[in-house]
Length: 154
Image 1: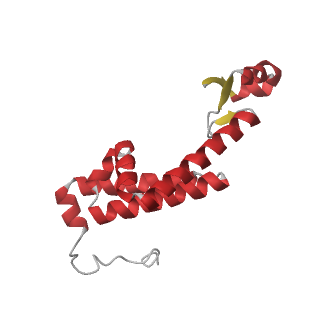
Image 2: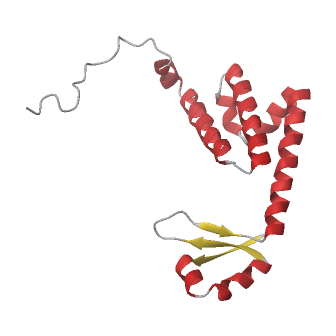
Image 3: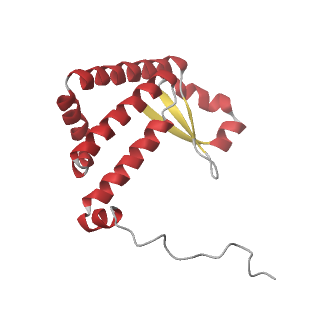
């Protein structure tokens, strides 16, 4: 699928100039101070959502029946999984599959994307043995005392 980009202001000035592009491509409307917008035909959107639901459910079924194979498939797609300890890797796979299935069913994939980013950050922390040791503690006390904001403003 091809994608064409246009400025949002060009779309506002003349949508009839841009909408024909949807015949062969999705359209990204680029905005300066906001997140970009994507225009697509309903048929393509529905097909993508159906394909995502199918893939997510198929992967979840595979994970339930053949956990090691599902983990291997995800590890190939997400090579940073190898940095996680074995028990964390299993938790990660389960959480990501659950979020993916829920997102595929509802169309809300932002929780999946956030969890994916969170797990990747966790794996990156585990990849540095010194950092991993430090983050596991032990920690000395509660940390330094900090004054409440505004206490010394008299």
